[in-house]
Amino acid sequence: MIRKLLILCIPTLFLLSALPAPAAEDLLLKDANFIDGKSGTAIPHTDILIRNGKIVKTGKGLSAAGARVVNLSGKTVMPALICAHMHIGMLKGTTTSGENYTRENIIRQLQRYQDYGVLNVLSLGTDRPSLYENHLYDSLKSGLLPGARLFSAAYGFGVPGGAPPVEMGMNKTYRPMSDEKVASEMDSLVKLQPVAIKLWLDDFGGSFKKMDSSTYQAIIREAHKHGWKVAAHVYYLADARKLVRSGVDILAHSIRDSVIDDALVQEMKRRDVIYIPTLSLDEYAYSYAGTPAWLTDPFFLRAVEPGVVAMVSDAGYQNKIKNSPAYNRNRNAVENAAKNVKKLHDAGVVIAMGTDSGAQPIRVQGYSEHLELQLLVRVGLMPAEALRAATLGSAKVLGTTNQYGTLEAGKTADLVVLSANPLTDITNTHQIEAVYKAGTAVYTR
Image (cartoon, rainbow, N blue to C red):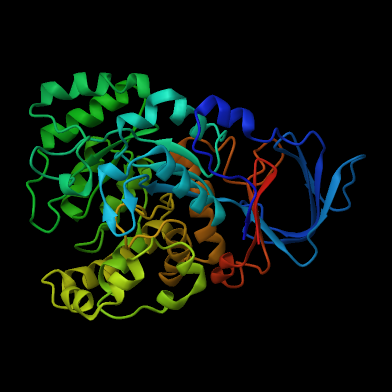
């Protein structure tokens, strides 16, 4: 692998001046098998003209005087992936902690997403104050620093003594003691301008007290006053019904305790609620009772944190998963999640791609996004539909469909070059030849 940008642990202003300026010359990608993210097909022998980081035109037989030409004959071009539910900075090796949340670790992880063709990510509610110091967040969101662009939901809202678990580094989330406190805490986020607001409504298998309905209703109400969408961590069907009725905008996980009813499906469609199934999270939760095939896959091994393979390969670890009281619950969760995403997709509810990668060592950043595509296809989506969820669907969560999610004139030239067509086999997304961020090659194999 050759990375075109390097992590430089130096002050922000110097780092920005050290980055190469966008190329002045036009870039013409020739003769690609072209997936634009809209049509659901691959258009053969297509050229893509890029200028100043934007797509100018696509079509056959394009030319541009003075343009740098890259021949992509036999290659497939698709939009870069977007992960609408992940976590950044807290993971390092086999540990998850607020102590890991450093500038260096954040950029390192964003580069990993980039190398896997994921160029926009949403960190959903677990960021920390240091992200907003010295213009770091503004630079990451704008794409001025190496790696995927980072969008943030700031600190999120949990329950005093409850979810999200403080021991997993989530000690900066707001945990209002009263509904009256919600308004002032929401107001404090104005200067951070979160893309969305995250709330946790789950008891984590009976381990925690759930958030009161009056509290999450206050969170939704106050967030909407500021024009912010609300994404909810959810598990149970009954909770999903109440959240949708209360005006939540995004269900950030699958409904996993039972199969969703038709009435809720139609209510979600009517209210334009976006569904992020995070199927890979549930796959990871039970798979390490054995030895999943990806443990020997080089594509996985390049992404996984040091020490994780040894940890999950240990017989004691595997037996702990297999003998856990949660094992059967997790297996059932996978089955229900599969049925629910297919049912919602077939009804026309917007599906977006998220993985919860970075929240635990086993949720591998970069690789998980490709596993999510495979799982979406396994539950019944066509490859083109899975890709649309991971591009345009996720761009809808970020509110950036005018810039990202499809490859068309006027949009940012975020694209992935593959050696094989993912519409015939979704695992072909592993065959990454190059990644272009705003028209600049940031990764080549």
